[in-house]
Length: 110
Image (cartoon, rainbow, N blue to C red; front, top):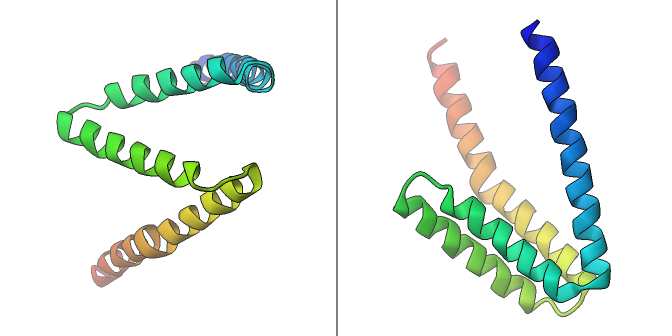
């Protein structure tokens, strides 16, 4: 029974997300200023929902760094290329070493 309710809620969230995406996509094409205002508000809401002030500060620092890097990209194509470079750099230099460290810890206990 709980699984059925979860599935219905998932579909509801998916539908709402798709409607919101369509709305933001239309706004991006038709009214760039309003889109940027909505984007900023969504970012602010998310960061303000962080449980403590230290985490909020780290999130704002990360967001400001991201915005600064994207601003210097110049074109839409350069922004997507830059976003991919930033992602893969973070993956190889932060996530992967941490995954390897945790893997070593788990395998030592065997």
